[in-house]
Image (tube, rainbow, N blue to C red; front, side):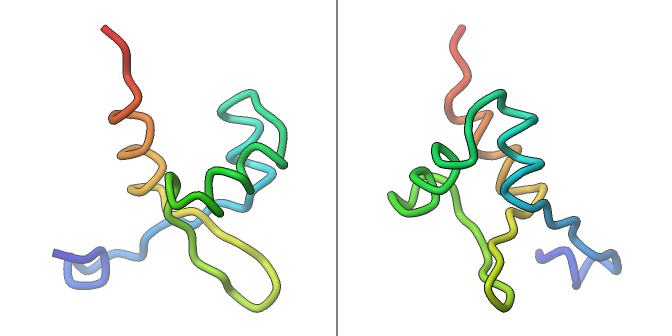
Length: 64
């Protein structure tokens, strides 16, 4: 079920906010997007990362 179907808008984060949250450079986030490891949406000339995609990305890389 998509966020739209659930009756709520999905929050989209700019690359700078994702880089800050992950404590990496914006270049690293762009590389993750280019490699397909981190799904992103291109809106105009800017990239945005959905909150759900970021959470999934982090969960998949979680080390126990």
